[in-house]
Image (cartoon, rainbow, N blue to C red; front, side, top):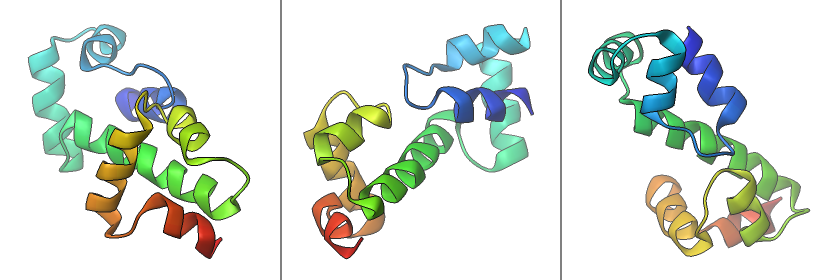
Length: 100
């Protein structure tokens, strides 16, 4: 699936539904609808899940700061990253980092 490959290859940069739709030569609406049907996730949910899985691995390795981890995973704002990470995992990025 082209869109999943695109997300996995580019999650650390500015990934957009519009760019993915262009890549697949379909409208954004069509891509959004078929992506949800095929994966069970909307485009942005899937992107966030890939970013958070990668962030978790980086945090467990413990070699990077929270800010560096957020930036490497496509988050421009480390506070937003920390807040959303805690919402998803129920634990702060700092605590995951200490576990590693």
